[in-house]
Image 1 (cartoon, rainbow, N blue to C red):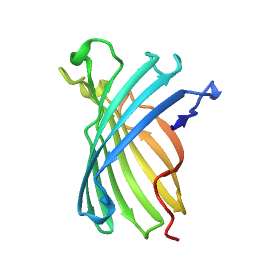
Image 2: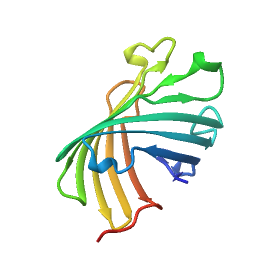
Image 3: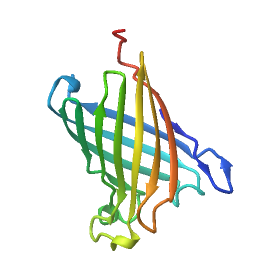
Image 4: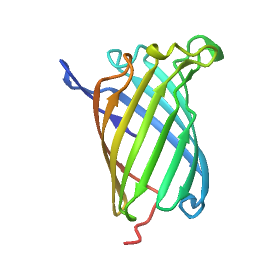
Length: 174
């Protein structure tokens, strides 16, 4: 269960809420050129962080390993449980990574929020961020650090991330 603790100007370190995730991917995806999966996420948010207390997303995963390059596309759909299917938001993400070796990767990521599926927002009202990311694997732990830059008026101008994760199902081969 990931827990997010964002840092924002004027608020300092603050607790966002929590997110429950379940990930289903092609078995042994790292051994295949084409891979796929889906991630389901249920979020409980603080009011200052999200306008709705309960939100969810479905994150399809489609990717190719072109050793040493990975290309991943996520056609994500978000909901805040208002307005039915007509209010589903399209929030796609993409990642282009260069795997230096089995432990290190550098990547460029793009995150967007285009608006409701029924009618996308005008470009100046959309959210678009581009990220520079560094990934490092240490035994069963993953460390991901990055800096994101907003490219539209609705985007955060500068964002940092540090994610520490552990795969509970993997066994270290080191």
